[in-house]
Amino acid sequence: MENSVTLLDVLRALPVDARAAIFGEESSRLFAGCRLACHELQQQHDSTITHVRLQRRCALGRGPGRGESHLPLSKFSRCSRLSVTASDGAPADPLFAILEGTTPAARQRITHLTLTRGPYDWKGYDRRLVVESAAAQLPALEVLELWGGEDRTRLSLDMVSSGQHRHPRHGVCSMMAALLPTSFVCLRVLALDLVTAADLFSVGALAALPHLRELSLSNLSLPDFITDSSYSSNSSRQAAGQQGGGSSSDRPPPAALQGLSQLRHLQRLLLRAARELRDLDGQHLLISLLGCCRPPSLDTLTLVDLYDDATEVRVELGGGCAMLTGRVDGPGAAAAGMGRGIGSVHAKMQEDRHFASRRAAVLAPALLAAADSLQQRLIPELVLSGERWQVTPAMCTPEALSRDPLPRLLARCECVDVEWLPDIPRSRDPAHSTAPKEVSLSLMRMLGLPRYLELEHGGW
Image (tube, rainbow, N blue to C red):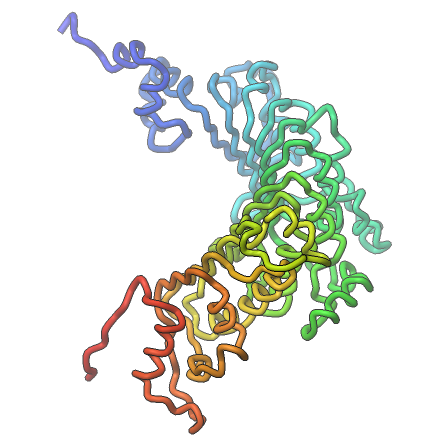
């Protein structure tokens, strides 16, 4: 029909928010065919998208005979978030190539930048060059996420052999702080992979970022060319000895923990580590970050497994000074004086019986030690999620309430929320050969009713 209304007519009449409800705000392959249908439909789509995803396998740029139409961001006039995946064949600084030829107004709109390397790539991109490009060309950047990558340009083999790579001035955090006050003044969220020991030692330099509120640090186990002795100082050995047990050479270095404590405005801290909270290293880390090395304004501390990206422990702070008893002295005095006790704890009991049992044995002493350092009498809430974890029958006895860490922790929590009751293996010790029914009832009295309860009626 001559007067029929086409899809393009509808899209032209719609405001951009309505078009976003159709196309979404993120570039997607679902609309690849739509973009190829006609040039105007492609323009309607691209002018709506605010989150642009690019994958770079080769160098970009104008090149001979190439105009602005070949520049990837020239089509997305509303781009405020840019996510780039850099493969091994990409230039060392893919951001510079992507931003080449863009207008100052287009760069001013970008507030969120994410760079990752491909899942099967080893080199990815050079983080230092990317940081320099972001500092020079993205003045309004609020969120910066750098996953993967390496330091190709300034981390030579001579620096590694001489130990200079461990100096904080070579860390990417120190580099970002040095670019102030002309760059990163709006940065609120920062996510980094710790590639070198210098990255770890230079975390304290981030205190210079005036608006940094959220920090995510990943890959806490350093690369293979960094040995344990290269980032374990004498002071860390002494601190580890005071905690007791374990190998002190594996302890987090005091320089890194002290650096975190200097981030006075930080509110959310997330750490991704290959070692989960089932050994003394995780216990030492949790005690330190909840006590003497806690950033003063911290609201949430989250520890995440590096491999499956699952939350292991999340601690919400701000339990209030009403929970605190007596006069608080020592390392926890600053946090307690501001009424920043432990508010709630969410722990994932992994679906592996052995590891979950170890985690419970490590997590409970760490939380008790942190509460003791704050002289916090009660923890308002403890949430235990997961369905496959174990406790021993001996832990369900009245004597265990004053001896074992987990019952003691449960006794100090106002509210205990359990997703699944743990399994109770039969004990071979005649002194603890309590009937399963009595042990289960004792456990339920200690933990409270679970969210889920399965009844096994008979067996074949």
